[in-house]
Length: 99
Image: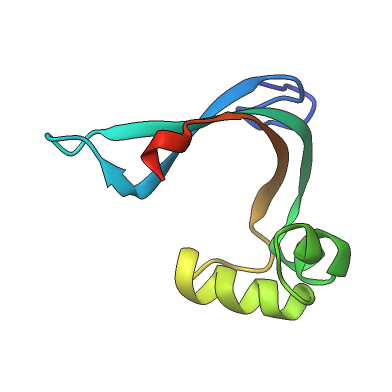
């Protein structure tokens, strides 16, 4: 937890990534990669909507296309004033036998 941002994640921490396409026999998540958090950027949905650089880090052409997907697919009903965090990470290790 990073008290300066209010985010439960902080730069330098390790996280384990899973995929919704990889599930164990009883439905549990299976870690497929280890990553290290590089940065945590707090902001609002509208601030990120206006940030083409944040959108491009996430693989979108611009902030509008990021917002369209984010608000309609991932979090329907989210408001522009809602606080969100952009977490940038680098993959440290990946379990290639799962792919």
